[in-house]
Every structure is written in structure tokens, then in C-alpha cells.
Length: 404
Image (cartoon, rainbow, N blue to C red; front, side, top):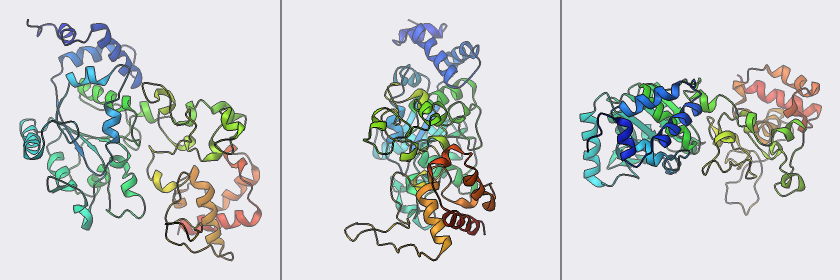
């Protein structure tokens, strides 16, 4: 039977009901903050669109982004989106291996030159460390360069490919770069780029962006970090289920105290929700079941640049805290008590990185105005700190020194 003259019937023939398909389109429209009438337009364009070739490259990563993608829900990405793309190359999902897999990639590039969509997850080693990660004997950078020059556009999936992620954390032994870094440094061709950050990103963020590109041949509106505004415009804190407790200044002090059991705010336990732009609080995980904060763990800021170096959920190797002789980390010298800059640095790393950049040199507030902010006590997040005059002077000295 030929359904080519009725795309919606063809979808139904492929075990997808018309109602499910239209529900999918309505869901994507809502997720991407498109006008209500865009749902019908999306449905029409999806069924008429040719299946674009997609090449998915995995570099320095953990496969978490692929795991997230395959768990997209409401509706299931497995039953719908794969009818609209041709996934021609993916290290984890492809059946082919070895030379057959690489030949499939080369054929996809050749047959879809200038038209295929390139998805990248994982960071890219560079410089003298380029050979730290290879695929079929080809370095990640060389493979990215080979593929990107003929791609129509690039989707960087996950914090490793968008901002460098864990591989780029200090001391960055592989000189890891993000896709955008490679473009800016002139190591690969510049192409239209969208960053879907997160460790891993929300499943619906990946699938919705794909659907939008397939239907409209362009990316949705992006923020200054090239992330879709529909998912990253607001902070995790803005929509947090514990927000009312933050407003009431009710904070858990430990993970097992009575306040934690009552669901009080986790800010004082290191939650970075106030400075993390993502939609975890809305769309959640495991088919909309929950998210880390609802499960009792603070947000770790995984969708922001340099989140591994901001501390709060691990002790960085260059931390100024002391280590006992049984610790496997290398011994670190104690902070000199007579060095205000060192004292200020220790205070900053122990307290301020929960909300601010690891590098205080990027502060827009002038260093000599910061002390007064604490004295005035107008900023709610600062009320949990009790710095004395000497500590505030040391903090000011450190921030001033970082701007030189």
C-alpha cells in the first residue's frame, strides 16, 4: 500500500497514531516556547521534511549524553524522531564497526555534502596532547575537522563539548577544548552552532532542538552562550520546588538533619541553582519523575562553563585546604596567616565559588564595593556568611589582585 500522498497516514502505518504525533508536536512547541499556532506548522513540516543525515561524533566523554538522548520522553523519542532523521554514524548505537563504520561515515559525508547535521559530544584534545583520544587511529581534532567542513550545522551536546567539561578541568592534562573553542582558534571551520549543555543534558532538550532544526532548517533562539533560551533562559533556582524555603531563609545544614528531611533549601549545602541556567526543575528526569534537588542533592551547576573548577561538591587539587597524610591527594602548603591575599583566596574558594566564577577577575562589581555589600546585608545569599572586618579586607585584597 502506498501512503506517500498522505504523510500522516504513513506515520500511522508505522505504528504511530495521528494523535500521538500531534501530541509530540504540541509538546515540542511548548518546550521550545514557540507560539501556540506553531504546533500545526511543525506537524506539517515534519511529515514533509526529508530525513536529514546525522553524524554523531563521540570524543572525550562518558556516553552519558547518548544515554540521555535515548531516554527522551513525553512522547518517546525512540518511536518518533528516528523516523525523521537518518542516523548514519554513532559510535555507540551503530551496528557496523571497524572499517565498515568509518566507510559509512565517509559515504554519509560524500552523499550529503553541505546538508548533514553534525552532533558532537565530548571535548577535543589539542596541541601536543591531540593524540590522547583517537577513533580508528584518527585524532578527535582531525576527525572533527574532516566532518565539520561539509556539515550544514553543528549541535554540541553535553558540557564536555560545549564548554570543555571534566576533561578541561584544572590542570587540563589533555589541553581539552570545546567545539566552539576549536572554531574560535581556527582549528576547524566555523559553522552554525548550538550548545546543549549539561552533564548530561536534559533528554527533551536534545530531541526538541533536533525536531526544530528538521522542521524549520534553523536553530531556536539562543542565549549568549549559544544555548536555546527556551531551556536555559531561567535558573534552576527560579523554578525550584524548594524555592519557598529559600525565601523563608530555611536551610538544611547537613544532608541528614531534620531540615533536610522536611525538604528545606539546600543552598548552604552547596547548591548552585541560583547561578545555573537549566530547566531541570521543570522537565526533570526519568520520564519527568524527579531531579537532583528533589532527590535531596544540591545542584552542581553542570550546565555552566568551568563547573568542575568551581568547587562545592569535591575538593580540587589546587585547593588551599590542608590534607592529612593518609589522603591520596598531594600535600598542599597551609595558607600563610600573614598573607591577606592568600587568606582572601582561601575564603573565596571555601565560600564564594558556590555562586560565582572560579576566577574573581571577571567580577563586574568593583572590589572596594564588595565589603560594603556584606555590611549592608541586603543580598539574601550573603546572610549565611559571617565574615569579620579582617576577613572582608582579605577578600577585597584577593579580588583586587586577581584583576591585575
